[in-house]
Length: 498
Image (cartoon, rainbow, N blue to C red; front, side, top):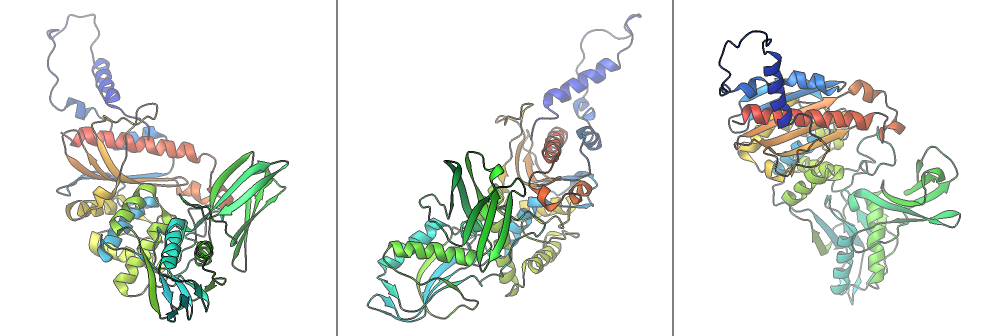
Protein backbone atom coordinates (compact mmCIF):
# COMPACT_ATOMS: atom_id res chain seq x y z
CA UNK A 1 0.00 0.00 0.00
CA UNK A 2 1.13 3.55 -0.66
CA UNK A 3 0.19 6.62 1.31
CA UNK A 4 -2.91 8.13 -0.25
CA UNK A 5 -4.38 10.19 2.55
CA UNK A 6 -1.65 11.25 4.96
CA UNK A 7 -1.73 13.31 8.11
CA UNK A 8 -0.21 16.11 6.03
CA UNK A 9 -3.11 15.79 3.59
CA UNK A 10 -5.63 16.04 6.42
CA UNK A 11 -3.94 19.15 7.80
CA UNK A 12 -3.75 20.84 4.42
CA UNK A 13 -7.40 19.95 3.84
CA UNK A 14 -8.26 21.81 7.04
CA UNK A 15 -6.21 24.79 5.96
CA UNK A 16 -7.86 24.79 2.55
CA UNK A 17 -11.30 24.73 4.10
CA UNK A 18 -10.44 27.72 6.29
CA UNK A 19 -8.96 29.68 3.41
CA UNK A 20 -11.86 28.86 1.14
CA UNK A 21 -14.33 30.35 3.58
CA UNK A 22 -12.36 33.57 4.28
CA UNK A 23 -14.10 36.86 3.42
CA UNK A 24 -12.76 39.32 0.84
CA UNK A 25 -10.13 41.72 2.17
CA UNK A 26 -11.85 44.94 1.01
CA UNK A 27 -13.50 45.52 4.38
CA UNK A 28 -11.94 45.70 7.83
CA UNK A 29 -12.01 42.44 9.77
CA UNK A 30 -15.08 41.88 11.90
CA UNK A 31 -12.96 39.95 14.42
CA UNK A 32 -9.55 40.54 15.88
CA UNK A 33 -6.62 39.16 13.88
CA UNK A 34 -5.19 37.68 17.08
CA UNK A 35 -4.96 33.89 16.61
CA UNK A 36 -7.66 31.84 18.29
CA UNK A 37 -7.38 28.13 19.21
CA UNK A 38 -9.18 25.78 16.83
CA UNK A 39 -12.38 24.33 18.21
CA UNK A 40 -12.16 20.75 19.47
CA UNK A 41 -12.84 18.15 16.80
CA UNK A 42 -12.28 20.47 13.84
CA UNK A 43 -9.76 18.10 12.25
CA UNK A 44 -12.17 15.20 12.63
CA UNK A 45 -15.06 17.18 11.12
CA UNK A 46 -13.03 17.95 8.02
CA UNK A 47 -11.89 14.37 7.35
CA UNK A 48 -13.05 13.00 3.99
CA UNK A 49 -15.87 10.50 4.52
CA UNK A 50 -15.55 6.86 3.58
CA UNK A 51 -17.76 7.28 0.51
CA UNK A 52 -15.69 10.27 -0.59
CA UNK A 53 -12.49 8.24 -0.32
CA UNK A 54 -14.04 5.47 -2.41
CA UNK A 55 -15.04 7.99 -5.06
CA UNK A 56 -11.57 9.57 -5.06
CA UNK A 57 -9.86 6.18 -5.43
CA UNK A 58 -11.00 5.70 -9.03
CA UNK A 59 -11.52 2.04 -8.24
CA UNK A 60 -13.96 0.18 -10.49
CA UNK A 61 -16.36 -2.39 -9.08
CA UNK A 62 -17.72 -2.68 -5.56
CA UNK A 63 -16.27 -1.68 -2.19
CA UNK A 64 -17.56 -2.73 1.22
CA UNK A 65 -16.14 -2.00 4.64
CA UNK A 66 -16.91 -2.14 8.33
CA UNK A 67 -14.96 -0.92 11.35
CA UNK A 68 -15.78 -1.62 15.00
CA UNK A 69 -14.39 -1.13 18.47
CA UNK A 70 -12.42 -4.31 19.21
CA UNK A 71 -13.28 -4.46 22.90
CA UNK A 72 -17.00 -3.70 22.79
CA UNK A 73 -17.89 -4.76 19.25
CA UNK A 74 -19.61 -1.40 18.71
CA UNK A 75 -19.86 -0.83 14.96
CA UNK A 76 -18.46 2.61 14.18
CA UNK A 77 -18.78 2.93 10.43
CA UNK A 78 -19.88 0.83 7.46
CA UNK A 79 -20.36 0.97 3.73
CA UNK A 80 -22.25 -1.79 1.88
CA UNK A 81 -21.27 -3.99 4.80
CA UNK A 82 -23.94 -6.64 4.11
CA UNK A 83 -22.86 -7.20 0.50
CA UNK A 84 -21.26 -10.58 -0.20
CA UNK A 85 -17.93 -10.17 -2.01
CA UNK A 86 -14.99 -12.50 -2.71
CA UNK A 87 -12.78 -12.51 0.40
CA UNK A 88 -9.73 -13.98 -1.39
CA UNK A 89 -7.06 -15.01 1.13
CA UNK A 90 -8.81 -13.28 4.02
CA UNK A 91 -10.63 -16.64 4.05
CA UNK A 92 -7.50 -18.06 5.69
CA UNK A 93 -8.34 -16.09 8.85
CA UNK A 94 -11.58 -18.07 9.16
CA UNK A 95 -9.69 -21.29 8.40
CA UNK A 96 -7.20 -20.50 11.17
CA UNK A 97 -10.04 -20.11 13.68
CA UNK A 98 -11.66 -23.32 12.38
CA UNK A 99 -8.42 -25.28 12.72
CA UNK A 100 -7.72 -23.98 16.22
CA UNK A 101 -11.27 -24.83 17.33
CA UNK A 102 -11.17 -28.45 16.15
CA UNK A 103 -7.50 -29.46 16.17
CA UNK A 104 -6.07 -27.26 18.92
CA UNK A 105 -3.07 -24.95 18.90
CA UNK A 106 -0.72 -27.75 20.03
CA UNK A 107 -1.76 -30.22 17.30
CA UNK A 108 1.06 -31.76 15.27
CA UNK A 109 0.71 -33.63 11.98
CA UNK A 110 2.51 -36.99 11.76
CA UNK A 111 4.13 -38.71 8.79
CA UNK A 112 5.05 -42.34 9.44
CA UNK A 113 7.08 -45.22 8.07
CA UNK A 114 5.22 -48.46 8.76
CA UNK A 115 6.43 -52.05 8.37
CA UNK A 116 3.70 -54.58 7.57
CA UNK A 117 5.86 -57.47 8.75
CA UNK A 118 8.55 -58.11 11.36
CA UNK A 119 12.12 -56.93 10.98
CA UNK A 120 14.65 -59.76 10.85
CA UNK A 121 18.39 -59.19 10.45
CA UNK A 122 17.72 -55.64 9.23
CA UNK A 123 15.18 -56.69 6.60
CA UNK A 124 11.48 -55.81 6.72
CA UNK A 125 9.64 -59.09 6.17
CA UNK A 126 6.77 -57.38 4.40
CA UNK A 127 6.02 -53.98 2.91
CA UNK A 128 7.31 -50.55 3.91
CA UNK A 129 4.64 -47.85 3.88
CA UNK A 130 5.24 -44.10 3.72
CA UNK A 131 2.00 -42.90 5.31
CA UNK A 132 1.00 -39.25 5.19
CA UNK A 133 -0.90 -37.63 8.03
CA UNK A 134 -2.05 -34.45 6.31
CA UNK A 135 1.11 -32.46 7.11
CA UNK A 136 1.06 -29.35 4.90
CA UNK A 137 4.67 -28.47 5.75
CA UNK A 138 6.48 -31.76 5.00
CA UNK A 139 9.53 -30.99 2.89
CA UNK A 140 12.51 -32.69 1.28
CA UNK A 141 14.71 -32.15 4.35
CA UNK A 142 12.13 -33.98 6.48
CA UNK A 143 12.15 -37.02 4.17
CA UNK A 144 15.94 -37.00 4.20
CA UNK A 145 15.88 -37.09 8.00
CA UNK A 146 13.36 -39.95 8.01
CA UNK A 147 15.56 -41.97 5.66
CA UNK A 148 18.61 -41.35 7.89
CA UNK A 149 16.64 -42.42 10.97
CA UNK A 150 15.49 -45.58 9.18
CA UNK A 151 19.12 -46.47 8.51
CA UNK A 152 20.03 -45.70 12.12
CA UNK A 153 17.24 -48.04 13.26
CA UNK A 154 19.08 -50.87 11.51
CA UNK A 155 16.87 -51.28 8.43
CA UNK A 156 18.93 -52.55 5.49
CA UNK A 157 16.34 -53.86 3.06
CA UNK A 158 12.64 -54.43 2.40
CA UNK A 159 11.48 -57.84 1.23
CA UNK A 160 8.08 -56.68 0.06
CA UNK A 161 6.75 -53.55 -1.66
CA UNK A 162 7.31 -49.87 -1.05
CA UNK A 163 3.86 -48.33 -0.65
CA UNK A 164 2.79 -44.70 -0.39
CA UNK A 165 -0.49 -43.70 1.26
CA UNK A 166 -2.11 -40.27 1.06
CA UNK A 167 -5.60 -41.32 2.09
CA UNK A 168 -5.61 -39.52 5.43
CA UNK A 169 -7.32 -36.69 3.53
CA UNK A 170 -9.29 -36.73 0.26
CA UNK A 171 -7.38 -36.21 -2.97
CA UNK A 172 -8.09 -33.26 -5.24
CA UNK A 173 -6.25 -32.68 -8.51
CA UNK A 174 -6.18 -28.94 -7.86
CA UNK A 175 -7.78 -26.39 -5.56
CA UNK A 176 -9.55 -24.28 -8.19
CA UNK A 177 -10.30 -25.49 -11.70
CA UNK A 178 -10.45 -21.94 -13.08
CA UNK A 179 -6.75 -21.20 -12.54
CA UNK A 180 -4.04 -21.60 -15.21
CA UNK A 181 -2.60 -25.10 -15.20
CA UNK A 182 0.98 -24.07 -14.41
CA UNK A 183 0.57 -21.79 -11.37
CA UNK A 184 2.28 -23.18 -8.29
CA UNK A 185 -0.30 -21.79 -5.87
CA UNK A 186 -2.94 -24.18 -7.25
CA UNK A 187 -1.51 -27.67 -6.56
CA UNK A 188 -3.12 -31.01 -5.87
CA UNK A 189 -4.28 -31.94 -2.37
CA UNK A 190 -3.43 -35.18 -0.62
CA UNK A 191 -2.88 -36.59 2.84
CA UNK A 192 0.75 -37.13 1.75
CA UNK A 193 2.13 -33.85 0.46
CA UNK A 194 5.64 -32.55 -0.15
CA UNK A 195 7.12 -29.07 -0.65
CA UNK A 196 3.62 -27.58 -0.79
CA UNK A 197 3.08 -29.96 -3.72
CA UNK A 198 5.36 -28.04 -6.03
CA UNK A 199 8.35 -29.12 -8.12
CA UNK A 200 11.23 -26.78 -8.92
CA UNK A 201 11.79 -26.11 -12.63
CA UNK A 202 15.06 -24.36 -13.54
CA UNK A 203 16.56 -23.56 -16.93
CA UNK A 204 19.96 -22.20 -17.93
CA UNK A 205 21.31 -21.20 -21.30
CA UNK A 206 23.58 -23.91 -22.72
CA UNK A 207 25.00 -23.26 -26.19
CA UNK A 208 22.13 -22.80 -28.61
CA UNK A 209 19.61 -24.27 -26.17
CA UNK A 210 18.90 -24.58 -22.48
CA UNK A 211 19.71 -27.03 -19.75
CA UNK A 212 16.65 -28.04 -17.72
CA UNK A 213 16.28 -29.54 -14.24
CA UNK A 214 13.17 -30.69 -12.35
CA UNK A 215 13.89 -31.32 -8.68
CA UNK A 216 12.46 -31.41 -5.16
CA UNK A 217 14.59 -28.51 -3.95
CA UNK A 218 15.02 -27.70 -0.26
CA UNK A 219 17.54 -25.84 1.89
CA UNK A 220 19.90 -28.83 1.99
CA UNK A 221 19.10 -31.02 -1.01
CA UNK A 222 18.15 -30.98 -4.69
CA UNK A 223 17.05 -34.52 -5.57
CA UNK A 224 15.96 -34.97 -9.18
CA UNK A 225 12.49 -36.40 -9.76
CA UNK A 226 11.07 -38.57 -12.52
CA UNK A 227 7.37 -37.90 -11.91
CA UNK A 228 7.64 -34.49 -13.62
CA UNK A 229 9.32 -33.85 -16.98
CA UNK A 230 9.85 -30.76 -19.12
CA UNK A 231 10.37 -30.35 -22.87
CA UNK A 232 11.27 -27.06 -24.56
CA UNK A 233 9.20 -26.42 -27.68
CA UNK A 234 9.82 -23.86 -30.44
CA UNK A 235 6.73 -21.67 -30.17
CA UNK A 236 5.47 -18.38 -28.79
CA UNK A 237 2.23 -19.41 -27.11
CA UNK A 238 1.05 -21.03 -24.97
CA UNK A 239 3.95 -20.58 -22.58
CA UNK A 240 3.18 -23.89 -20.81
CA UNK A 241 1.21 -27.01 -21.62
CA UNK A 242 0.48 -29.96 -19.33
CA UNK A 243 -0.75 -33.52 -19.58
CA UNK A 244 -0.92 -36.45 -17.19
CA UNK A 245 0.68 -39.55 -18.69
CA UNK A 246 0.10 -42.50 -16.39
CA UNK A 247 0.92 -40.54 -13.25
CA UNK A 248 3.76 -38.51 -14.79
CA UNK A 249 3.36 -34.73 -15.06
CA UNK A 250 4.48 -33.96 -18.61
CA UNK A 251 5.17 -30.26 -19.19
CA UNK A 252 6.25 -28.30 -22.22
CA UNK A 253 7.44 -24.69 -22.26
CA UNK A 254 7.76 -22.20 -25.12
CA UNK A 255 11.38 -21.39 -25.95
CA UNK A 256 10.45 -17.76 -26.58
CA UNK A 257 9.64 -17.33 -22.89
CA UNK A 258 12.92 -18.63 -21.45
CA UNK A 259 15.48 -15.89 -22.05
CA UNK A 260 18.93 -16.56 -20.59
CA UNK A 261 17.72 -18.53 -17.61
CA UNK A 262 15.36 -18.62 -14.67
CA UNK A 263 13.35 -20.79 -12.33
CA UNK A 264 9.83 -21.24 -11.02
CA UNK A 265 7.77 -23.69 -8.99
CA UNK A 266 5.22 -25.78 -10.88
CA UNK A 267 2.30 -27.63 -9.27
CA UNK A 268 2.45 -31.35 -8.61
CA UNK A 269 -0.64 -33.41 -9.46
CA UNK A 270 0.43 -36.70 -7.84
CA UNK A 271 1.89 -35.73 -4.46
CA UNK A 272 2.01 -39.29 -3.11
CA UNK A 273 4.21 -40.49 -5.97
CA UNK A 274 6.32 -37.34 -5.67
CA UNK A 275 6.98 -37.96 -1.98
CA UNK A 276 7.64 -41.64 -2.61
CA UNK A 277 10.26 -40.95 -5.28
CA UNK A 278 12.08 -38.41 -3.14
CA UNK A 279 12.12 -40.71 -0.10
CA UNK A 280 13.31 -43.63 -2.20
CA UNK A 281 16.27 -41.58 -3.47
CA UNK A 282 17.33 -40.73 0.09
CA UNK A 283 16.91 -44.35 1.22
CA UNK A 284 19.17 -45.42 -1.66
CA UNK A 285 21.81 -42.92 -0.52
CA UNK A 286 21.86 -44.79 2.81
CA UNK A 287 22.22 -48.17 1.14
CA UNK A 288 18.53 -49.10 1.48
CA UNK A 289 17.23 -50.18 -1.92
CA UNK A 290 13.46 -49.85 -2.25
CA UNK A 291 11.28 -51.04 -5.12
CA UNK A 292 9.38 -48.48 -7.16
CA UNK A 293 6.70 -46.82 -5.08
CA UNK A 294 3.12 -48.02 -5.44
CA UNK A 295 0.05 -46.08 -4.37
CA UNK A 296 -2.26 -47.80 -1.89
CA UNK A 297 -5.75 -46.50 -1.12
CA UNK A 298 -6.19 -48.25 2.23
CA UNK A 299 -3.61 -47.96 4.99
CA UNK A 300 -2.12 -51.40 5.76
CA UNK A 301 -1.76 -52.46 9.37
CA UNK A 302 1.72 -52.75 10.75
CA UNK A 303 4.38 -51.49 13.14
CA UNK A 304 5.44 -47.85 13.10
CA UNK A 305 9.21 -47.64 12.62
CA UNK A 306 9.74 -43.88 12.20
CA UNK A 307 7.49 -40.88 12.92
CA UNK A 308 8.08 -37.32 11.78
CA UNK A 309 6.11 -34.64 13.63
CA UNK A 310 5.37 -31.21 12.23
CA UNK A 311 5.61 -27.95 14.14
CA UNK A 312 2.57 -27.08 16.23
CA UNK A 313 -0.55 -25.93 14.47
CA UNK A 314 -0.12 -22.49 16.03
CA UNK A 315 3.26 -22.08 14.32
CA UNK A 316 1.95 -23.53 11.06
CA UNK A 317 -0.96 -21.06 11.05
CA UNK A 318 1.34 -18.12 11.73
CA UNK A 319 3.35 -19.01 8.62
CA UNK A 320 0.17 -19.65 6.64
CA UNK A 321 -1.14 -16.17 7.43
CA UNK A 322 2.25 -14.59 6.73
CA UNK A 323 2.99 -16.32 3.43
CA UNK A 324 -0.63 -17.04 2.43
CA UNK A 325 0.08 -20.66 1.48
CA UNK A 326 -3.01 -22.12 -0.14
CA UNK A 327 -2.06 -25.76 0.40
CA UNK A 328 -1.67 -25.19 4.14
CA UNK A 329 -5.11 -23.64 4.39
CA UNK A 330 -6.76 -26.48 2.48
CA UNK A 331 -5.11 -29.29 4.45
CA UNK A 332 -5.78 -27.59 7.78
CA UNK A 333 -9.41 -27.02 6.81
CA UNK A 334 -9.88 -30.61 5.65
CA UNK A 335 -8.23 -31.92 8.82
CA UNK A 336 -10.47 -29.74 10.98
CA UNK A 337 -13.59 -31.03 9.26
CA UNK A 338 -12.42 -34.60 9.72
CA UNK A 339 -11.86 -33.93 13.43
CA UNK A 340 -15.25 -32.23 13.67
CA UNK A 341 -17.31 -34.91 11.89
CA UNK A 342 -15.12 -38.00 12.01
CA UNK A 343 -14.96 -38.00 8.20
CA UNK A 344 -14.54 -35.58 5.31
CA UNK A 345 -16.02 -36.05 1.87
CA UNK A 346 -14.10 -33.57 -0.27
CA UNK A 347 -12.90 -30.00 -0.55
CA UNK A 348 -16.26 -28.41 -1.37
CA UNK A 349 -18.03 -30.45 1.32
CA UNK A 350 -15.46 -29.38 3.88
CA UNK A 351 -15.76 -25.73 2.86
CA UNK A 352 -19.54 -25.91 3.32
CA UNK A 353 -19.02 -27.42 6.76
CA UNK A 354 -16.64 -24.62 7.70
CA UNK A 355 -19.17 -22.08 6.43
CA UNK A 356 -21.85 -23.62 8.63
CA UNK A 357 -19.49 -23.57 11.61
CA UNK A 358 -18.70 -19.91 10.96
CA UNK A 359 -22.40 -19.10 10.87
CA UNK A 360 -23.14 -20.98 14.08
CA UNK A 361 -20.05 -20.01 16.07
CA UNK A 362 -18.81 -16.66 14.77
CA UNK A 363 -22.12 -15.10 13.75
CA UNK A 364 -21.15 -14.99 10.07
CA UNK A 365 -24.74 -15.28 8.90
CA UNK A 366 -24.04 -15.04 5.15
CA UNK A 367 -20.77 -17.00 4.97
CA UNK A 368 -20.53 -19.00 1.73
CA UNK A 369 -17.09 -20.51 1.13
CA UNK A 370 -16.04 -22.89 -1.65
CA UNK A 371 -12.61 -23.69 -0.19
CA UNK A 372 -10.39 -22.94 2.82
CA UNK A 373 -7.81 -20.74 1.08
CA UNK A 374 -9.87 -18.16 -0.77
CA UNK A 375 -8.44 -19.14 -4.15
CA UNK A 376 -11.86 -19.91 -5.61
CA UNK A 377 -13.69 -16.70 -6.51
CA UNK A 378 -17.05 -18.32 -5.82
CA UNK A 379 -16.64 -17.67 -2.08
CA UNK A 380 -18.61 -14.82 -0.55
CA UNK A 381 -18.30 -13.04 2.79
CA UNK A 382 -19.70 -9.72 3.95
CA UNK A 383 -17.62 -7.04 5.63
CA UNK A 384 -20.09 -7.05 8.52
CA UNK A 385 -19.71 -10.80 9.06
CA UNK A 386 -15.93 -10.73 8.83
CA UNK A 387 -15.68 -7.85 11.29
CA UNK A 388 -18.04 -9.62 13.68
CA UNK A 389 -15.82 -12.73 13.56
CA UNK A 390 -12.69 -10.69 14.21
CA UNK A 391 -14.30 -9.07 17.24
CA UNK A 392 -15.13 -12.52 18.61
CA UNK A 393 -11.56 -13.68 17.97
CA UNK A 394 -10.12 -10.58 19.65
CA UNK A 395 -12.04 -11.34 22.80
CA UNK A 396 -11.46 -15.09 23.00
CA UNK A 397 -8.65 -16.27 20.75
CA UNK A 398 -5.08 -15.88 19.53
CA UNK A 399 -5.78 -14.80 15.94
CA UNK A 400 -4.43 -11.28 16.30
CA UNK A 401 -1.05 -12.56 17.48
CA UNK A 402 -0.85 -14.90 14.49
CA UNK A 403 -1.47 -12.17 11.91
CA UNK A 404 1.39 -10.32 10.26
CA UNK A 405 2.26 -6.66 10.62
CA UNK A 406 1.02 -4.58 7.69
CA UNK A 407 3.19 -1.47 7.34
CA UNK A 408 1.61 1.80 6.30
CA UNK A 409 3.59 3.53 3.58
CA UNK A 410 4.65 6.97 2.44
CA UNK A 411 4.02 8.65 -0.92
CA UNK A 412 6.85 6.65 -2.52
CA UNK A 413 5.62 3.31 -1.24
CA UNK A 414 8.23 2.99 1.50
CA UNK A 415 7.18 1.49 4.85
CA UNK A 416 6.87 4.10 7.61
CA UNK A 417 8.26 2.35 10.69
CA UNK A 418 7.29 5.22 13.00
CA UNK A 419 3.72 5.49 11.72
CA UNK A 420 1.43 6.04 14.74
CA UNK A 421 -1.14 3.53 13.47
CA UNK A 422 -0.19 -0.15 13.76
CA UNK A 423 -1.96 -2.81 11.73
CA UNK A 424 -1.99 -6.61 12.07
CA UNK A 425 -4.16 -8.13 9.38
CA UNK A 426 -4.61 -10.64 6.56
CA UNK A 427 -4.40 -9.52 2.98
CA UNK A 428 -6.24 -11.14 0.09
CA UNK A 429 -5.58 -10.72 -3.62
CA UNK A 430 -7.09 -12.21 -6.74
CA UNK A 431 -7.33 -10.61 -10.15
CA UNK A 432 -9.49 -7.50 -9.62
CA UNK A 433 -10.16 -8.57 -6.03
CA UNK A 434 -8.42 -7.04 -3.02
CA UNK A 435 -9.24 -7.61 0.64
CA UNK A 436 -7.78 -6.61 3.98
CA UNK A 437 -9.15 -7.55 7.38
CA UNK A 438 -7.73 -7.51 10.87
CA UNK A 439 -6.81 -5.26 13.75
CA UNK A 440 -5.45 -1.73 14.03
CA UNK A 441 -4.18 0.22 17.00
CA UNK A 442 -4.57 3.98 16.86
CA UNK A 443 -2.06 6.46 18.22
CA UNK A 444 -3.82 6.64 21.59
CA UNK A 445 -3.90 2.84 21.96
CA UNK A 446 -7.50 2.31 20.87
CA UNK A 447 -7.93 -1.13 19.25
CA UNK A 448 -10.22 -1.32 16.23
CA UNK A 449 -11.34 -4.21 14.06
CA UNK A 450 -11.89 -3.65 10.35
CA UNK A 451 -12.67 -5.34 7.05
CA UNK A 452 -12.29 -3.86 3.57
CA UNK A 453 -13.43 -5.83 0.52
CA UNK A 454 -13.01 -4.56 -3.04
CA UNK A 455 -13.96 -6.48 -6.18
CA UNK A 456 -14.63 -5.82 -9.85
CA UNK A 457 -16.29 -9.16 -10.48
CA UNK A 458 -17.63 -8.10 -13.89
CA UNK A 459 -14.12 -7.42 -15.13
CA UNK A 460 -12.80 -10.60 -13.52
CA UNK A 461 -15.50 -12.74 -15.13
CA UNK A 462 -14.37 -11.58 -18.57
CA UNK A 463 -10.85 -12.98 -18.12
CA UNK A 464 -9.91 -16.17 -19.89
CA UNK A 465 -8.06 -18.84 -17.93
CA UNK A 466 -4.85 -17.97 -19.78
CA UNK A 467 -5.15 -14.30 -18.74
CA UNK A 468 -5.50 -14.97 -15.04
CA UNK A 469 -1.82 -14.98 -14.09
CA UNK A 470 -1.08 -11.39 -15.19
CA UNK A 471 -4.19 -9.74 -16.64
CA UNK A 472 -3.96 -6.36 -18.32
CA UNK A 473 -4.85 -3.61 -15.87
CA UNK A 474 -4.71 -5.92 -12.86
CA UNK A 475 -1.72 -4.35 -11.16
CA UNK A 476 -3.04 -0.82 -11.60
CA UNK A 477 -6.39 -1.82 -10.14
CA UNK A 478 -4.69 -3.50 -7.20
CA UNK A 479 -2.57 -0.41 -6.46
CA UNK A 480 -5.71 1.72 -6.30
CA UNK A 481 -7.31 -0.78 -3.92
CA UNK A 482 -4.24 -0.72 -1.64
CA UNK A 483 -4.23 3.07 -1.58
CA UNK A 484 -7.90 3.10 -0.65
CA UNK A 485 -7.28 0.63 2.16
CA UNK A 486 -4.62 2.84 3.68
CA UNK A 487 -6.75 5.95 3.28
CA UNK A 488 -9.61 4.31 5.17
CA UNK A 489 -7.31 3.01 7.91
CA UNK A 490 -5.79 6.45 8.46
CA UNK A 491 -9.24 8.00 8.51
CA UNK A 492 -10.37 5.57 11.21
CA UNK A 493 -7.20 6.03 13.20
CA UNK A 494 -7.75 9.79 13.38
CA UNK A 495 -11.50 9.70 13.75
CA UNK A 496 -11.93 6.94 16.34
CA UNK A 497 -8.49 6.83 17.93
CA UNK A 498 -8.77 9.77 20.30
